[in-house]
Each structure stands twice: as C-alpha cells, then as structure tokens.
Image (spheres, rainbow, N blue to C red):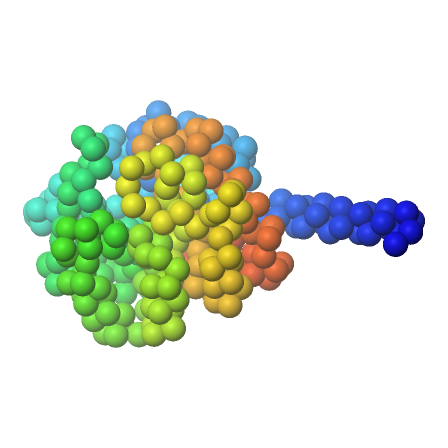
Length: 307
C-alpha cells in the first residue's frame, strides 16, 4: 500500500472519529432520575447540568431536600427541571398516614410531572441507608402504583436483584416483578440501576415483556467500581461492554439514560465524570440508537415534548 493511501485511510478514520464525537456532543441528554439531597444543592443544579451537558433532569428529593425546593427549581427553569414526587422514606416504609396524606397532596399539585423510584428491595448502604424491603402488594406500593397508572407516569421500580439474591430473596421478588408486568402490560415499568441484573437476565426480561425498561444509573465504573455494592458495570476498559452494546442496538427503545444523584457529593465532578462515560458510550452507537437512549425514550415515556 502506498504512503498516499495510508495517509488517506488515516484521514478518513480520523474524520469518522471526530464526527462521531461531535454527534455525541450534540445529543441533548435527559437524566431520567436524580434526587435533590439538600436546599444548598439546589443552587448548583443548573450550573452542574450545564457543565455536564444535561438538557433536562427528572428531579425528586430526599434527606433535607424538600418538595418546595424542587418545585421552585421547576418554576424557575421549566425547560430544564421536571419535578418528581418522592415516595420513599421512613413514612413510606412504615406505611404511616403521613405518607398517604403527603402523597395525596403532591398528586394534586400541577407542578409535578413524574413519580420517583418506588423502593421494593434496597440493601443496607453502610451507615447512610438501611435495608428496606417492601412487598409489592403492600398498601403503600399499591397506592403509589395506582397513582402512577392514573397519571400515566412510568412506575420506576427499585429492586436490587444481586443483593436480594445474596440474601436469599431474589426469586421471590422476581416472581413479584413478573406478576406486575403481566398485570399491566400496557404500562411502562423502568428498572432503576438496571435492576442489578446481568446482560442475559436483562435480555430475557426484554424478550418476555414489552413494558419493561432499564435506567442506566449506577452502572458505570465511577459508581459500580467504588461503591462496594453489586451494581452492574456495563463498561470494560472504559468502553461499553460488547454484550450491552449489542443489546442496546437491538433494543434501543428499552434503555433510558439516567444518573440518579443521591448524596450531596454526587452533585459535583462525579456527575460530570459519569455523564462523560455515557456520552462516550453513546458515541459508539448508531446515531438513532444514541438519541433514543440519550433523550427520546424519556421524552416519549414521560411526555416531555409537551412540557
């Protein structure tokens, strides 16, 4: 091969790399699930979204973060913040009257456009978060589910299957999940944190149920590699693992980009680092696939084009 052909080939390859990166940079990413942990954090949310290249976030609240903090952000930045109703917390776990009255009040507010994750199986996280196990047929879960069905909002399920199986509880909750997906075949049920499921398990669920989706939160090396929890790492050597890449190309309508910031430290450089992993991953995918995962699936499922 002549030197001219070698140089020409190199220039074509370089052009493709540059164009792919440019296309990835142009994808208007929507973070489909994050949480505001404090009122102080609220002051930095938009600035951090701008730095990370996030166009919108479906934002709930936890800890010292309150509904009014998220609502104020939504009023000030209606094109960037979609306030999301919180269901978790001690009142949810215990099924107190305060949980039901608070939920009812929030459901009456036009400020909210989504419902945050519903905890079914949550492992203990050091001294930060206790183990939380709630049966899907419990009153608090069924009340939340009926509200999401009535509003037409996706019902986000939090089941940590790897941790649940280690505790001998995985099959019981998989049976519950099967029953839920069969009972409401026309309603979307996203699994946050990929459900802590491996690629073969995700593929099996996608093949079996048309109404299950998977949010990519906590499934990158930044979180999965450092948390001490059995989160699924969808990356190998900083690139999307082949089995996940193949599945995303085959089923682009079933994956939803999301980060799920939880703690105050998540609202910083670690957010940008995680987004960069996913922006690079999306650059490896076909253009239409990348846009579906990056923002279009969220727009479709939560009706964000109308907001």
